[in-house]
Image (cartoon, rainbow, N blue to C red; front, side):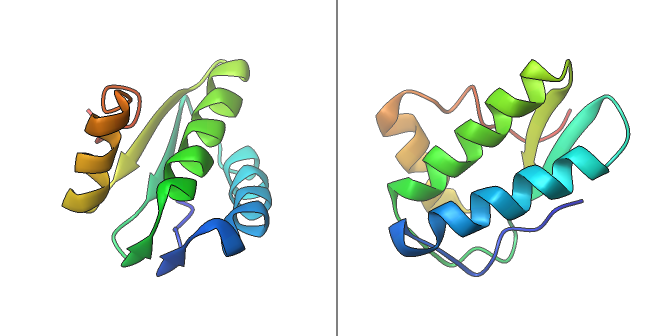
Length: 90
């Protein structure tokens, strides 16, 4: 399972997105899941990265989920109205 870095802000967003997309493409299965437990420092760019990963997963016919989303990022997703798009695996 691909893992988010401890810091994901605008500065790291592009490189992190490319790494995640490559890692998700290499993982077999019907669900693309990202581990966010290490994430400590982030801004709204983290949501943009996760939403782009979701878009890529759905385009490939896969479900997308995020494991261990920090509560503050969950709250930010709620403020932006995308909390249902980025959720724990189920």
